[in-house]
Length: 234
Image (cartoon, rainbow, N blue to C red; front, top):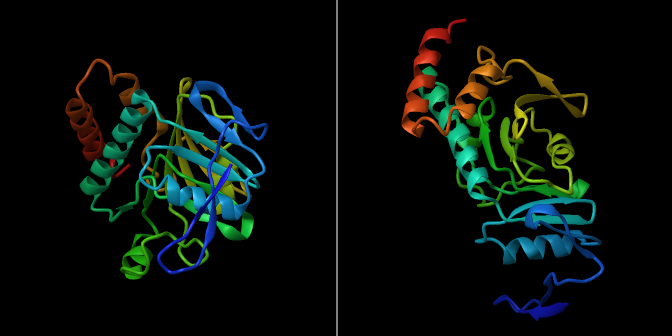
């Protein structure tokens, strides 16, 4: 179904609203996959869903929309908070941009990460100043680290999109556990330690995440802070 939308500039653009059609296929866990979505349609839909809590992935004409769960948002917040606390303790400058949409028109790909951070490229993003409210990956560097919570099934693989954008590191939490993934020759490989924080083994965060139901968030942050202070020089 399509409707017409005329912005104040006087120009007109078609707005394509998804509805159940042969090109809209439901997947598991409440996700919907739209097929044969053009790049122009994708960008129009981003404007429509700008203030909506929808996790999306776009790759070569396929668009998946998923509403995050309580567990999903809780776990992404916890990992982001631990990363922020570690960076603060180490005096490492970071720039968190949350779930800002990462899109690359040249390859017709886009993804809304759960959380992402500039670390090595933080100075470049600081120097960017107020140049536009949207990330321009044709000119801006990709984030250094993304956090992905995959506690629900996704029909559209997200890691290949992050790889094509050039995100060097992904922390991926699944029901089976936490992985640190590093970008190697266009794909991700599991690694035992963080790329951005080489002293940090994946097992430390894995244990904290496993204990989240038996401890308050503040207790977990304090435990992690104590560990960082003890091992940062390793």
